[in-house]
Amino acid sequence: MAEKTIRIGTRDSELALWQAHTVEKKLNDLGYKTKIVAVKSTGDIILDQPLYELGITGIFTKTLDVAMINGDVDIAVHSMKDVPTALPKGIVQAAVLERASTLDILVHKGNLDFLNGEGTIATGSLRRQAQWLNKYPTHKVVDLRGNVNSRMKKLNESNWNGAIFAAAGLERINLKPENFINLDWMIPAPAQGAMLVVAMQEDAFILDALSHLNDIETEIVTYIERQFLKTLEGGCTAPIGALARYNEEEDTIHFQGVLFSLDGKEKIEIDKIVPIEEWKKLGFYSAQEILITGGTKLMTEIKKTLKK
Image (cartoon, rainbow, N blue to C red; front, side, top):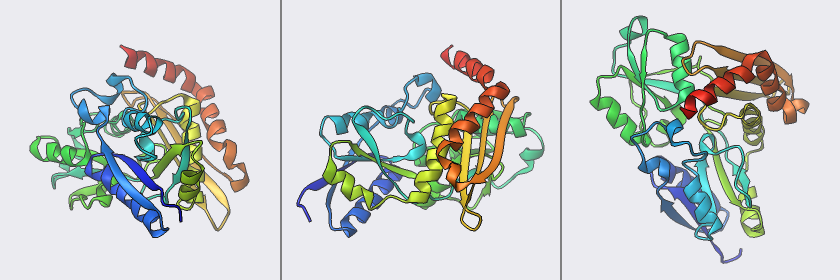
């Protein structure tokens, strides 16, 4: 095994470091030497503005992209749902790890009576906000930013009824509390629950090392979901959900995609099962169907509102 030490770039939150150490262990088990390099992203520093107001695609990934292009790190580990569908020139998707839970969950304070009346829910995600308001139109949704730990702390110190989290993030760092309910009716963010490792296109040694970590099923289903997102031109902030699942017995892909208005009142969805052979264009064709049935007009309205 070559003596080169693989420098793993990561954000410095507990969850990001957990992800980086997971990749590190897998590489170490294969005989590679590694070193963790932690950096702060703009998304971690500016916490007093909603994400969509910052107007930066890849707000959590940009700092690591620059570090990689500058040669300060060799690879970067991300929650795949945070990564823009178009990677910077010279950077490529090198490995997608086996997917964890795709579920969103509601962390609450032990009393769910508010679900039948008025309530206040916190989330920094326009997708979660729109889906929550679609189901609970009498509720108020407030913005919640920060890493998983600080968001949980803010919830505990607030008078909110609950906050929405990705199950995978809380499970990875053992922060999932007793008071939660699975939001299995909520379509997750494209690639939610998956971890992505990116590297420089020209680095054959690194790409070969990372190829051993790639999970092909997760790669395929996340490709479909991100293709759906990219075709809708959603970036990371529009209220777009997508979930593709492989059925091994029938050799089919079940795809669910959804686009909401910001207030949750409008909903355009697609739900289909296709043979596995059709996976390469499934996200594209599904997004086209959404666009034709009112999605183009809705996306224009969303972009106009977010620019204000």
